[in-house]
Length: 381
Picture 1 (tube, rainbow, N blue to C red):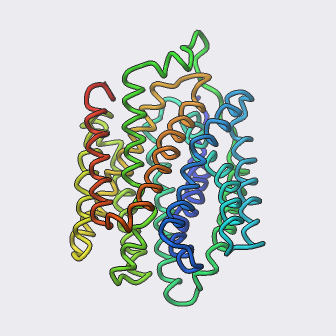
Picture 2 (cartoon, one colour):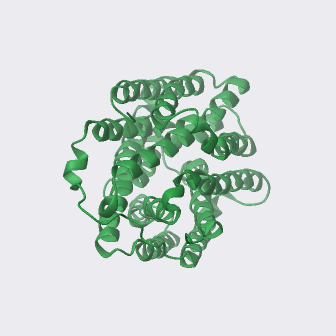
Picture 3 (cartoon, helix red, strand yellow):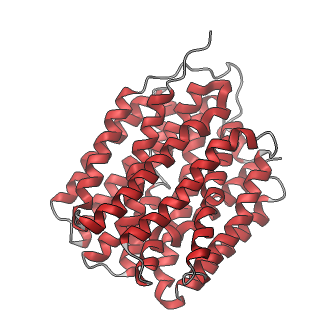
C-alpha cells in the first residue's frame, strides 16, 4: 500500500508562503514609496528578493541533497527568515538598514519554496499530476491576502503597519513547516547522470534561458504594477482586486490542469504561456486607461505565471532525478526567479522614468518573444 499523501499540511505551507508574497509584491512598493523612496530605489530594493535567489536556493538545495534532510533545511530557513525580517523593527525608514534586512530575510526565505516543491513531489511519487491540486492553495493564499489587504488598507489598517503583517505570516509559515512530515524517499537506486551532464543537454539549457526571460518580463509587473495603477488613480481596493483577479484565474487553471495535460503536453503548455505573455505585457503597457483591457491582462496571469510555472516544475522534475532533485528545483529557482527576477526589477526601475511605463512593458513583451524563440527548438521534446 502506498503511503498516504499529507495533502492538507502540504497545501497549508503553500498557503502561508504565498500569503506572504501577496503582501510583498502588490503592497511593499507602496510602503516603500510612502516612507520616501524614489522609483530607482524601489526597483533596487524589490530586486533584492529575486537577486538573492541567484545564490540562496543553490546553497540550500546543495545542503538539502547533501544531508538528505530537505524538510529540516526548510524549517531552519523559514525560522531564520522570520528572525532576519524582525530586524526591520529596529529601523524601517533608513535605506541601508532596510537593504541589510531584506538581504538577510530573502537569503533564507527564498530557499523554502523550491525545496518544498521537491518535498511535495517526493510525497506524491508517481502521482505528480496531483501537484497542481496542492499548489493551487498557494494561489488561494495569495488571492485571500491580496483581497483582504486591499480592503483593510483603504479602511482601517495604516500602510506603515505592513511589516507587522509580514512578520506574522512568516511565523505562520514556520509553524506550518513544523507540521509537515518527511516523505518516504522513492528515488530509484542505480547510476545517475552527473549534474554537469544534465546541464549540458540542449533542452535543459534552452529551458533555463527561457524560464529566466519569463521572469525578466515579469519584472516591471512585480515591481511597479501597483505604482502604475496608483499613478492612474486606482484605489488600494481596486489595485487589490486586479491582483486578486489574476490569481483567481491562476487557481482555476491549476484546478483543471490535470485534465489539460491529456490534451496539451508540457511543451505546448510552456510555449503557449510565452505567446500569451507577449500579449499580456502589451495590454498592460498600452491599455492602462481601459479597465476592460486590464481585466483581460490579469486573466492572462493564468498563462504567464500559472501555466509556465506548472510546466516548468514538471520539466525540472523530469530532467533532475535522484540525488539532484532538490538541486534541480533550486537551480531553476535561482536562474528563473533569481537572476531573471533581479534583472527585471533593475531594468524596470532604471528605465521607468526615462522610457515611461508603456515602453518598459513593451520591453517585457520583447523578452517573452526572445524566450519563445529560444524555447521553440528543443524545450519539452
